Every structure is written in structure tokens, then in C-alpha cells.
Amino acid sequence: MAPDGYLTRRQLRAQGLRPNGQPVAAQILWRSRRSKGVRTAYLYRPELACPVQPMTPAKAAALAAANRARRTCLGCGRDAGYVLPAHLGCCLPCADGLPAAA
Image 1 (tube, rainbow, N blue to C red):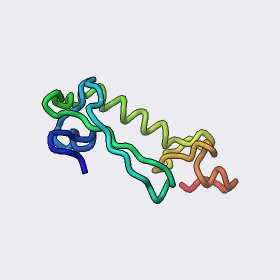
Image 2: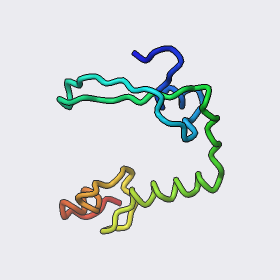
Image 3: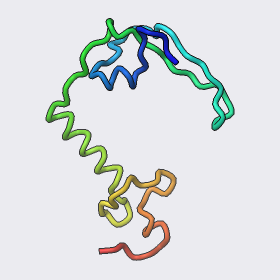
Image 4: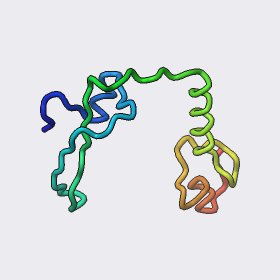
């Protein structure tokens, strides 16, 4: 639906680019059936975009630590293997009062 010469963030990322702080050049509005509202897609000019910065080992380690913290149960201290629900704050067996699986 976008006019030629404009790309969304996802389309930029698929080409290995990022908006690089440029202002939104255009937008597309459409009525959504799911959310019963108006959705928006911001469009950027690809000639002003820059290449995506590569993932450094330090960034990869920080991201892995953050994801591990989101999976670690505060009740039993084990890695649940999934992101814990924020409203529970613990793994599902701990929330149900069951002993943690080995």
C-alpha cells in the first residue's frame, strides 16, 4: 500500500537498514477489524537510512542476561524455559503451589 520510494521500519530492517533518526516522511492509515480502531504505518525514505549496527559480543551477552532474568523464577530459582508472566512474578508450578519439576 505504500507509494514507491517509501518503506516501513520492517521493510527497512529486511534490507539491513535503520531509519537513522530521520523524521517520518509519510504515513498510511487504515481501519482495523481486530482492534476496532485506526492503525498507522509510518514510512521512511530509504536513501536517508543507514546500515544496521552489528551486534557486538557485549550487546549479545547483555541481551542473553536480560532474557535469562525474564525466565528465572523468583520462587524456586530455576529457568522456566519461557518468559514468566509479569502478573504472577513466578513460574506456573510455583503460582499453582505445586512443587517445582526437577
